[in-house]
Image (cartoon, rainbow, N blue to C red; front, top):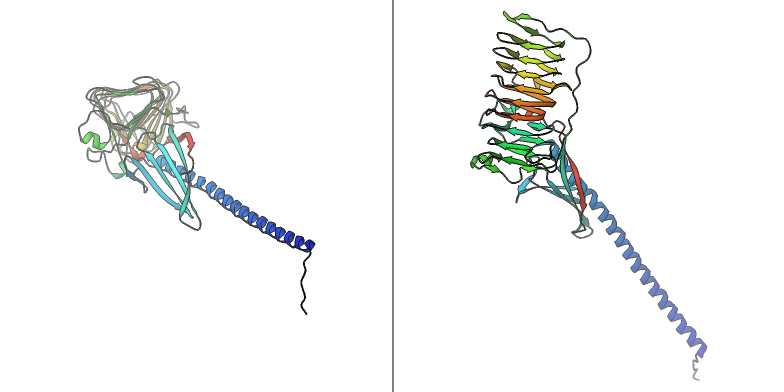
Length: 418
């Protein structure tokens, strides 16, 4: 006997409906899994994309730290290629590549790269910043207004920690800076400057036909004029006022040291006087750590002279004119950091033309600073205006350090993903 399986129309419809429902469920599940996978990928990509920005920022920080710590842009692992300096550093599963040009105020470009697992493709983000300098430390000459060179002055740098200055130890780390935004605010004239020059926004740097500004290679090739990339108009220097010393004061007096009778013999301590004058036949000696506060004029003239003995230090605070000629101030320590002239608010004139080389710092922000003669200047100077005349040579001692000069961010732009 044969049995026939009969499926009613209702049963067939139910079966078809079941198949459709299963298909829809499967389709929904596939769509959900696809959406979930896409969402995971997008979230992972977003996380990696966001992670690339701190790497790019780390490159910017590395470049700024390098600029503010070392005048040699090829130091600390930076490589010069194609006119720009670059450095790469790996951090975790990513890295940054940062580049900066050779300009006085460089443009810095930093890219952060993050690997996309499981392969070796990378997501990147790039930041570009422009720099400007604040402060005035680290410059051989800093002026609120004009800087003028006349005669065949040589302006360069050296490092006293490596030995005394000679033409063989000359470096091109001199930086001449004016806060002025006027035309010709830095007039190099016929001088030879081994280094760079900068003005305030809108200012210009000029030379005469035989003047020259550039690096060692530029001068070795006997080139004149201004080497490309050695000037900028980005200076925003500060000129804080100097304050006089406080506390109990001694009065400067004569004395005999090692059998020599001096007009003034200053041992360790803080001294105050209305005027400090050393004329023809006069002399002064500093044998300890001395602060000298002169409420009016400081003058050395004729055959007068002053001696800073080895191991001593001297800070001169002057509220009137500072005028030194004759034998000048001889710094027996040989270290610029041991001698400072600090102009107070009443100091409007600072002139040094002594036969002894000035080895120290002049910081007279309200004064017309003039250095002349053949004695030479080793250190750094700040003034309201600065004039070099008579072929005076000025040599910045890099041992003085960077001072307060800082490279700061002037503009910030983020590029899209590479």
